Image (cartoon, rainbow, N blue to C red; front, top):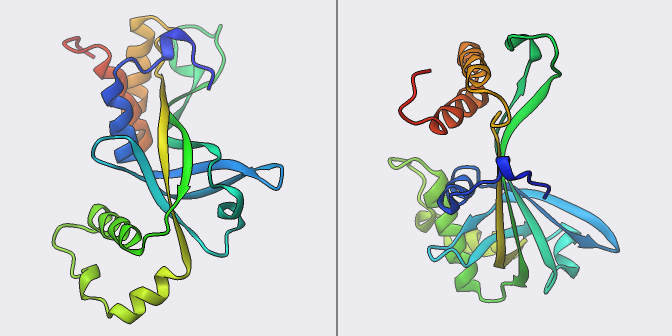
Length: 206
């Protein structure tokens, strides 16, 4: 990923926060000699050495992905930035965003217990705490049948890189204007970008 120095995510912990909070990711590999992508939930293990998830068995991407070095993209918040928010008309539109790219080698899961463990962790992550749905209460035969329709995988992580394009190449006054306009919009993405911009200026009044 192209990362100018002023947009580089310098805090490694922030990359893992993005992976955790924006875990519906894009997994890119080579399939039949062409780039191929699937959008799916992908989690990271506790010691941050592996990503893991599963494909629908009908998805051909898994058939030649084993041992490939792949790219997983975690798309954080993003927002259009209008030049009308600046103090001058000598400007052009841009886009602020946060993203994390993770590189690693794929291993297909053959152990049913490991696959079921990944199912449980995903359900635990995405279900609300007081949810009436409990995976261990579902009829075992149904779960067994569904598990035969997927192919689990894990990715041995070898590189993580993050980018935070948050108007760092502009003056504080201009950034302040951008934050104010983003907060006016009331949008979730806009609000998150505004919050992350303000974090770069801890202790400064916006």
